[in-house]
Amino acid sequence: KPLRVQIERDQVGSMIFWGPPGVGKTTLARIIAKHTRAEFVQFSGVLSSIKEVKEVMAGAEKMHRAGVRTLVFIDEIHRFNKAQQDAFLPYVERGDITLIGATTENPSFEVISALLSRAKVYVLKELTLEHLQGLLRRALADEERGIGELAKTAPDAVLEQIAIFANGDARAALQTLETAALSTEGDEIDAQLIADVLQRRTLRYDRAGEEHY
Image (cartoon, rainbow, N blue to C red):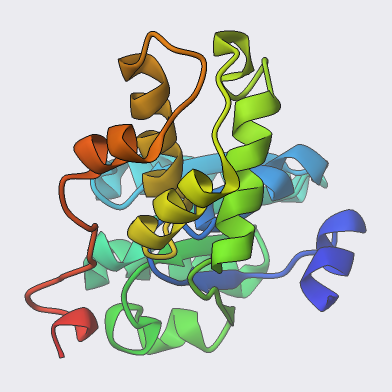
């Protein structure tokens, strides 16, 4: 796919990742950070102040003059107000930074039009049952980044049960698996244990957003 080619060639442009929770928006940004030779800076739409933004932008401008690119990743960009988003605009226009944003909200409504016109929007869909089951199998086996050191097993039917209840959200699926693995003294994670852990299905709901409608 074009995005993969851009990442592998370290030629990404400004972009917005739009999709539901747990589909890999931040993971994609981390992959880009690992592959790029540019300076990688991350902001949180919840925690970052406009003062912090301006300080980093000033540094990015100086580095651009020295021939160093800066990639700026904004998690939950929809939480940045208009003034905060405006602070990035001149630096994006001049090419001082490459902007990557992640959002669960429709960027047409939550990102200012000037920034939106300079960024490619990539829509990430919720993960399929097959995707989630594959992730769960890897987590069971991976001793470094998963829970392989716990030496737990789970039948395919149980992994499917977790995937169904995760509702397309990899983070929710992995948390359920980890909780179940830590809750049993036996070697196998069974359906009853998963039912006890889940209690109720995880459904996306945002009172003021699109999922409400």
